[in-house]
Image 1 (cartoon, rainbow, N blue to C red):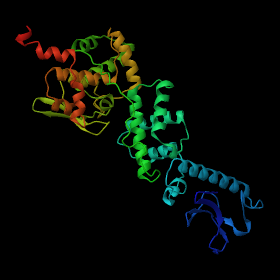
Image 2: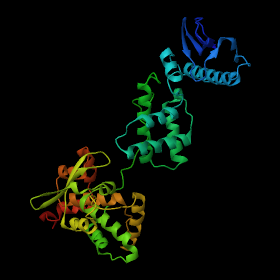
Image 3: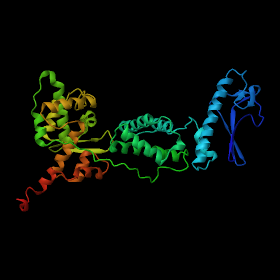
Image 4: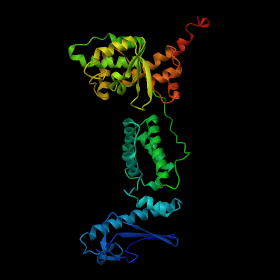
Length: 394
């Protein structure tokens, strides 16, 4: 095909070379202006000279054992190249040899955003399994929207259509859509860096996404006390341990995964004070938090001398969260409690007690102190604590 000074043509042994088997890869000759370059089609086997006809759509003779398969593949390849040429030309994009090579002749051919995204996840060394799973979730959603998005079609308009589809069809909130958008921007940035795109079409684009602030449910001291007073039967022993671990979270601010990974070596004693010093599983950030007498009793209650883990044999997080719903209902709480509620409870109580933000940030293991600032939004409890002893308001 030839289109505005650009042409593609399959050729075979254009330099009339010779080897023992007298067979060579089929090559694609690309001509831009007056310059031609050749690229081997390595997805199909080498073809002996005697089987090459060079005729359009029947390049390899039918007498070749794989002639039909090779011709079918070449027709498909040419169709993709022609489509790429039309899309590029109509979008005003300048075609270069490097761009065409990156699209069609790199190892592990990548033609779509979905393919590159999949490759990105396989090759990237993520900081945590949680982050990797978040990227996979975005990819699953993208594939549901369109499983074959040509790289050349990536644009502000396409992303806006995807956002609207997520809102209307998937009924997703902007806070979730914003996370997906962050992942897609990272992928498109990598596409540009790797030469699949001449420029980043999403750079400096402000999409109309307004993520709501996360709803950080927390318990009061009185509500935590209700949980601690619960009495369980022998058949409810698993719920008792779930209650204990959750209360331990309320007293230490640890995520459930961090509780699962808590070892003896993470417990330090300096003079008469016991501390937990470790690294969060989420970001490997160090944290340090004092252990109260109540938290120490819970650790002692569930510690097995034969195990280095502080809490032995804890269930998976989804099971833990389901059991917490039962525990909360049993305690008569009107709030839905989960793993994160324990951490939020600890944070709210620490702030209300007047602990400086820098210390709260260190106890929570936040990478940036600005993350901790989100917890300092004025709420009724903090407001009352600031003015309750002020004579002006007495």
